[in-house]
Image (cartoon, rainbow, N blue to C red; front, side):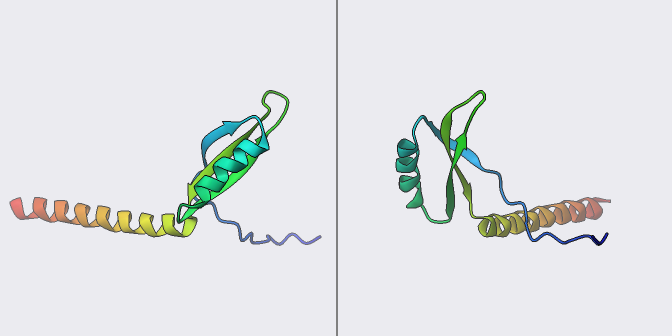
Length: 93
């Protein structure tokens, strides 16, 4: 084996939020089908198995590409506010 580092293509996205817990897969699948109708929303079913829990969790999150675009817009707005505040302070002196 070589000691070179392998670059992983996986990128972290926005966190998943649990929107429902169901004792059966059928109930979880029905909830998932309803949520699939929403645009730009990722949905998955995750089995929460033994030792403590036994249920199916329905999880959702915003599409990572859209979340990244919104984050860029928020950073730009914050930068504009900081610059405006700094310029205001400089003018008062």
